[in-house]
Length: 75
Image (cartoon, rainbow, N blue to C red; front, side, top):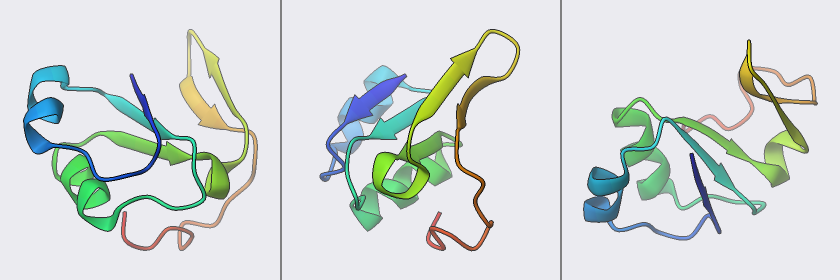
């Protein structure tokens, strides 16, 4: 799991870390970083869009908000 500010990330760092989930503590996420994460099949959450997150052993990370799939169109 990667927790970051939502600012641009170095692709090399992502290649080394290989996160399955990325959480941005931000209202926005750098679009290039979001695309890079999507291409690498990383599940992305950000607090400005998803609100609070919870983790359970059976379901992993999930938002506590009900969102429409059109929210965050560039993911």
